[in-house]
Length: 336
Image (cartoon, rainbow, N blue to C red; front, side, top):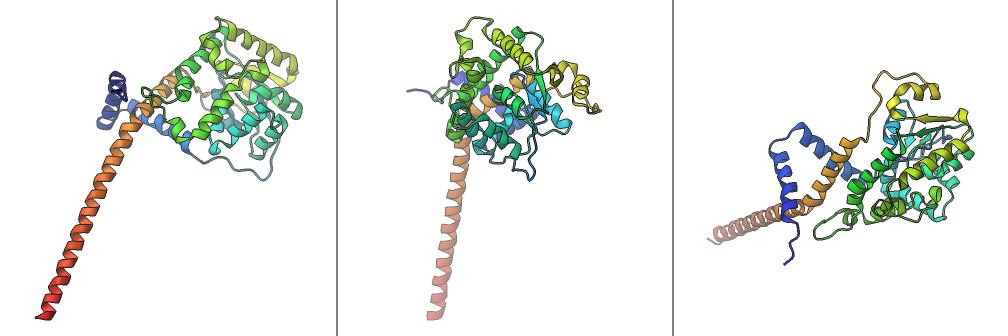
């Protein structure tokens, strides 16, 4: 008989859950917050609403993922911009994901997609999939400034990308099996399929890759392959964007170069540091906690609900019996 869970892995995941429930700590509370955040992104139907007066893009992000785009996204929001980052795609019942899939398939033009984003009040764009079409935005919004986030060197970016795909994204997209009961396809199958198609479009337009090649190539391609793509991208941006409109920005440099480029005051708070290695570790733990506990937790909830239902039925039957006895007693009194 096939076991539903690998016993060792199950014990490793259930034990922390029991500890969290019995002795909450700051670390365990942070893990639970991450779990709640993931479930909110997956299940929430709450998304931005169209604005009354759409405006143009002010900032075009031309940096690849894993170059500090999440930190820049947080920084731009501190500065008052309504920036569009990959996380936004998870919201709004998958509407954005389906539209980007249509753009990649040629059913919708990039120009239409940028118009759609402006209708929702976004005035800055970052990360995939928008960076695939930064040259279109460059033409549509001649007054917009371009920020290309960069890493210290291409090899570090390649390592960071491979870590993201192998340790985090792969866990989310893996099909459910007896040994890995991934719930995402059961909870939000349409959103899962849309996000899968969207991720597979990365690099198809900008680098001429095959669908899903940028996701899966780390298994078969030689070291340095992705680093060369990084160099190709940065060179292309420098050639296409006029120097006076372009900022090559390393988030390690903080507020000063960014605010100077945008012509805004420097905030009196530290520059945001988002999406570092510790965040990935936290995301991995949270997702594995969801994967390996949702079935036993669901079973426990069903068992509790069944016990309550049985108790309610027993109480109703007891009340019915008492009511019948009372009616019988009244009849006896009347007859006497």
